[in-house]
Length: 422
Ligand SMILES: *Cc1c(COP(=O)(O)O)cnc(C)c1O
Image 1 (cartoon, rainbow, N blue to C red):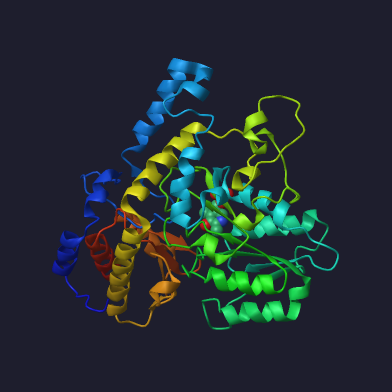
Image 2: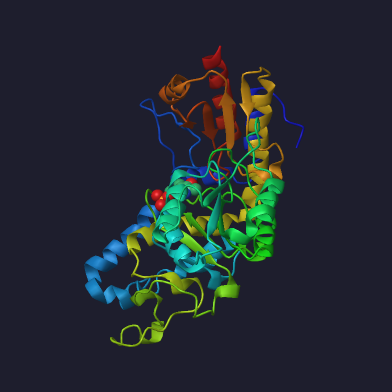
């Protein structure tokens, strides 16, 4: 959309036309002491709380109070199958089949459990590829996996890097890595949407390249779930994991999501760790059975899950389901495009957006690099109750989230940035 205009009136008009505008009132928006809403641009770090969350959690607290252990069967939403109530909506959001998705544990834990199955190095095929500016937790996770299997976490970890003088990754460079070292590579573990640059990579291309060399392909979707439409089933990747506290608004430290492609759903030979929760539901409570693993993503669970956290996820997913990812994407493209337009209109050479300009290669986040800036800029924004995320050395990450951010939020943010930079 190229018909953006400068000035507050344009932002007001866009908000009036916005079919999703009413959803903002379904969230708790933090306020300053004069009662003005913060300008909240960190839904990529911790999404805001839906107003319905409290009632969803209260329901489970009440059932626990009134039913004790009987709540596993007798609660309004029985706890025994509670995670199943989340599967269909979660699967829709990431473009997967229900058998491919489960909510369990947290992100880094899930990455490790998935690597137990999908990182099975041999003496000759053992290296792992990760992007050079991967989120630290992912890097630590793969380094520790290499180390655990007796490999060298420095030499056997291959970094897919942007070229000298560039910020973004090029798929042809991954192709070159695979051409040269593919026979030694066992696993690609790549951030589908990079947390730092906001770059959304083509998952299908990554899967195709990796599989051509016999590598397993896993994707970290922490910055993708609820932000872009990754069509996981169709992409052909082997596995993915994500958290639900960022774009999925499910509360601090909430549980993560896990995807295992259907092609692996019935492979009982795939090595994995076991607990009672990935054992066949029918015989789970007949103690001392030989282990009988469940099909699909549920076959990676270990423990009975925390229902209170699942209730918060359910509140949020119900909202996502009501709105639908198509409508969210439509607004997201407009809102982030508007943000980009205003930043570019500042027209100076010390501000640069490092996120891809092509809307198909990004989600809602823009990473804005401010030359010679230091953390002071971020501090001044925060003091003005403009909540953004600072990444050393000089990048502000801002995510206008289509569920609750407005065109006026974006307008006001850029005006403030302009006045601080003067
Ligand atoms: C947010 C994030 C994490 C956080 O991991 P937890 O295990 O949930 O603490 C990991 N990886 C990426 C890419 C992230 O964006």
